[in-house]
Length: 199
Image (cartoon, rainbow, N blue to C red):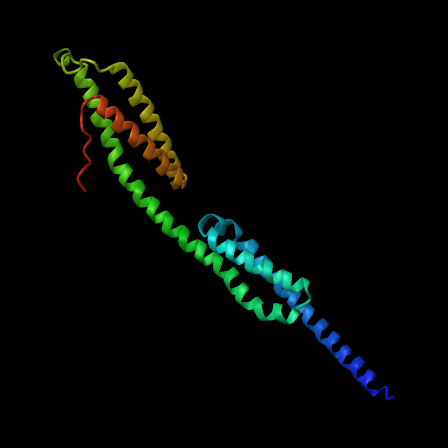
């Protein structure tokens, strides 16, 4: 029986091993490059585009599993798409961040236009009700408590402004929202309606 077929199989196997080895290094490099791209985008992507980040992580995990199975050809075929999506995370997160920052900026502008006027109106109302001539109108209203609330609200507004000044728009808007609710409640207690200033 001829031994040629055995030699042929050995030669084919050697070629396959050589091909496999030649694909392993670029496949490994692709995995490393994608991982680096994910690490670079991680922080902002987790905040602004978490769903997309989860999807790319899953694709990357599948790609690593393919690498572990030593199917390097499949890794090299799938890596460009995953890399493209990983690199896109940074720009997608940046765009979403800009969109949210603009929305928060507009919301802050609204609060900044309303709240100082609200506090002035409430302070004037307290001073008016404190007059002897307003005793009947002030009946049932705890003016000392109202004064305390105004003082606290003024402090809260300072905190909101400080947050805005340091670029913490999220905190500034959240604080301003809470303050507006407080002022509206106080205005109701003082039996006045707060009016939004004309644009």
